[in-house]
Image (cartoon, rainbow, N blue to C red; front, side, top):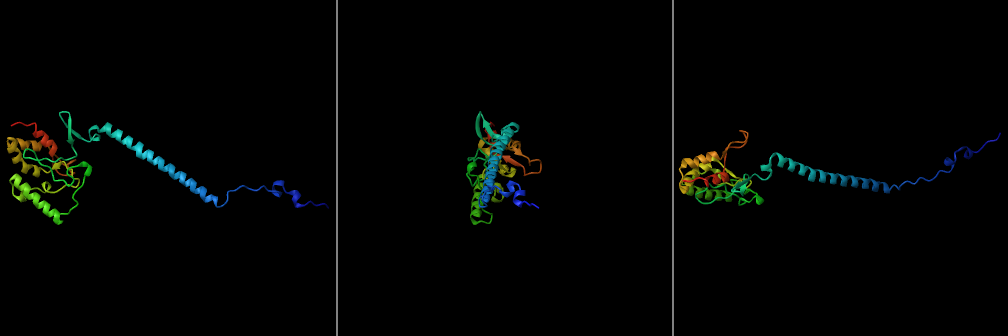
Length: 220
């Protein structure tokens, strides 16, 4: 009986397999790292363009459409000239104006900062004591009658408001310097006193810049 070798029964591909061109084992991690790098760069580019540009442009456009005044900085104008912002306090001097809170940043919005000093700090205590004596002498009131916000610095350094109590002790001085009846000045203070937001957030406060601008329009 004739038998054939197993070589003749196997397909030619099985008898003589062609070598498979596979990447060396050392090259596979490099390929995976390259894929991860491309994915990371792609995600970074999408995030930068999507959130850094597209999202910012969309929110700025929507804000300008819905709240044009606020988006522009809540600017306050007088006779066609920008005199300030509703969110940035200004320093005032002299007897004809209501004075703002002290500022650790000289009321500079580009350098917003507080003093970062606690009431227990000796330097803060000396500064507050000196400011209290100066305000009391200027307003003609005893030192214990001086409200805290007239001698302490706000956290931002550009707080545009003072408390109604801080405005009240300045009424007599401003009225006397402008030749106005104290009742008229007090009415102007009331007109520029803002209530707590939504009735619960914050406390009543007087906008100093708006009040002083209103005083400039009043005649004896």
